[in-house]
Image 1 (cartoon, rainbow, N blue to C red):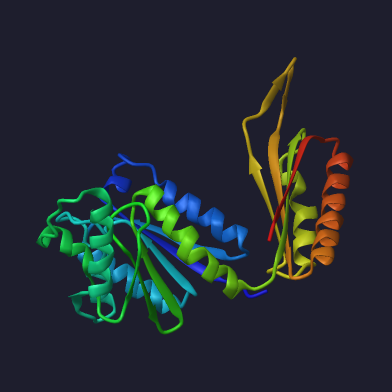
Image 2: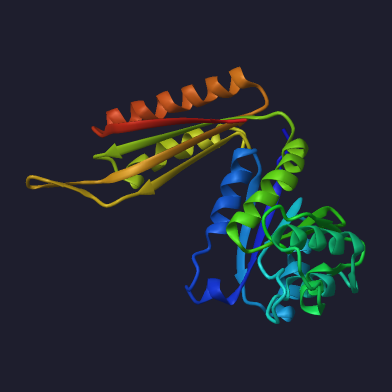
Length: 279
């Protein structure tokens, strides 16, 4: 199983001001996790060409397999993502006839009478050498371009549009690159044991395993208050990855048993267990 590294760059002042919650980064991260990839970095910046240029250049220098941008592809004055990407790649923006065709097909569906004016044609001006991807819900095409070892994809910021394009055109390609994989994820809800109490055992288990095959994380919650007592409340996440289903399942079960035994030894209680499979 290939380890697919990804960086996410979200563009929009509305994300920085708190006007809009950045659900796109959360959703994309979940999908990449499900296919066995790793998100190395999530960055949020405003609609500024200079900042987009700088962040794209810096990301490419880190050589992720994928750089996914979200937002700033529309027709308005502050939609500047493609301009910034072109600047970072030392390319010109040019009207792409395939992208123009995508806009025409989209507007025909919306209305018999439409004017493909300069404002709308802005969405068809993409970096030279890049590939437009049809937007099945909205107007602005997505854009795909390769730079050295990194595949760059620019997606619309509108969540339904972003998700539709990602699932149809991006996710299958990424999944193919990762290859066959199997992921077992276990989540324990635990009371009576703190993160610090479990550190020695978790460190021992993680250090004895292959780095890309096992991930264990504790997530603290609010304390549970009982009669004259306060108990720690945490969630323990165990993620086992591998190319072989049986071996991955055995690793997950082995680690799970070790952690469960340590919780019991520390007089903690597992109140709920959730198991998920991804492949």
